[in-house]
Length: 403
Image 1 (spheres, rainbow, N blue to C red):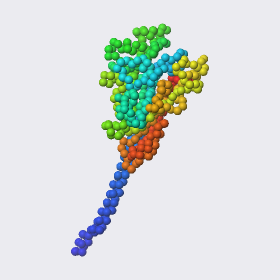
Image 2: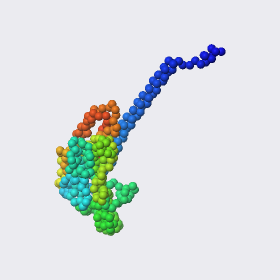
Image 3: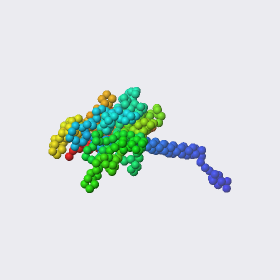
Image 4: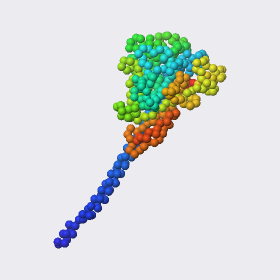
């Protein structure tokens, strides 16, 4: 009986217990290592996905705005009007200051330049000067070196008060196009601030809708029964890269946007708002329509001429809507000219996006070609991805197409 009791109480020896614990610790260590690796891989996948999402979103946002550049509610500048027989009177004479406030009504010449140049670009030099730019220095705050500034202008595509489009707002600037009758005023549009006094609205925006014939009689454009033409909000957007996201010095480059509107009682470009973090490189190039479909060089200062005047085919001094030659980058040393910007029919974007956090053990030794510009190697721990897209300025290029 005593021997049986002893056998029943026999367990692990101290050596066996220590071996078992060591094996258990090895298994736990392996599981912890696996868990850390999986978590690290998930974090890196999350960073990569974030970079891709930010890049695609940036291009999508920019494309949505740029694709409307030059839309003026159906208005066609004379220098783009292939039915014009005389010398165009509205060809831009200077590159406009894109951030000029509307403290007093803009001059007719300045408005002509705004309408005729739908997109503009400037370069932030490798060594950021102070002030940053000769124009818009108070709006382009803390820009990142070796990036670009882009301006996009057009009329809002929706009619105020219709659907989700905001209603007419006192003090905001609106564009109204002439559609009445066969003879249009010159210029055939109004660009002005919406007055607070309702009784003066039709004085500020006097253009009426196209007259409709009744019993074969077309009412005069001054007929009170003919309604006034729609007014569309004037849109001017400024895009640039700021060298921080939330607080100065945080080191997270961010895509910024400033839009024109009423701010502090003044019509001006508002304080820029942050859009997408991690956008580190931003280059803009313009496709210039400098040749007609007959191969002749454009000359918008002269009356239109045709290769086939009878059938109005192949203008010999107007563009055909297609970019010619290499795309142009507006640099500090060689800014874009009036002719280049007025004849831009496409925009090529390069957007370099980096992860917001570093990856231990990773070194970015790659170079990135942003058109005529090369960035890198950065030799740091951030992962990057380069996105590129060419956007056709449909409203400009389609006006120049001929049969």
